Image (tube, rainbow, N blue to C red; front, side):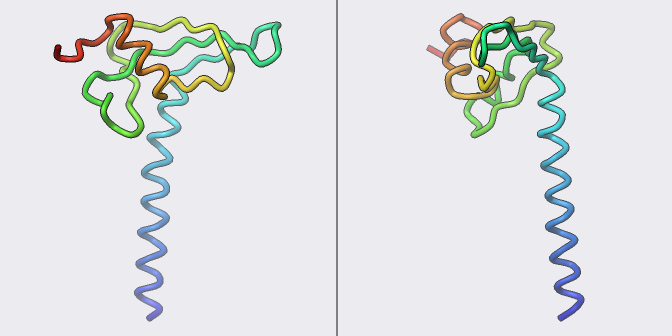
Length: 97
């Protein structure tokens, strides 16, 4: 019983560390500077990888060579559904149509 608890706790710890590293990497790609207006920021981040747009949490494409220059709410999510729509509407990706 002690062995199975030990193995289970190691699996949980390993998976937590594995997923935490990916989340920390995405945060490093976003530069956020608060503006004089409360709640608003200037953010710079790369676009999302086109192949990850259908995922629950898309991935930023640091190798694209492009930077999105965003002015808006500080709680804006660079990989959220609003940003996905914005990037598609600006022609950054072809929807296959």
